[in-house]
Length: 75
Image (cartoon, rainbow, N blue to C red; front, side, top):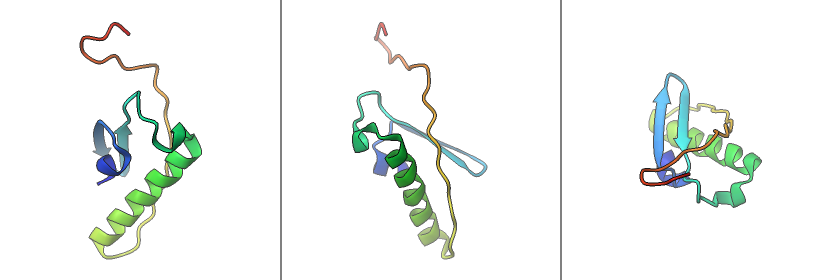
C-alpha cells in the first residue's frame, strides 16, 4: 500500500521499519522532506491500523543516498 501511495520503485520491511525507494524523477509533494516524512508515516499508520483492527503509530525519516544509477545509465 505504501509503495503505491508514494509511487515508489521498491519497498522493504525489516522489523518495525519500512523503507521505500523513490524514483529520482519523482516530484511527490515537491520533494519536500517534511511532507514526505509526515505523509509516509500517516499512510503507514492508517493502513496498519485498519488491517490490525487496533491503533498503531509510526514515525518517519528521510535518508538521502549518494545516488542510484539505473541499468544502462552512465550517472
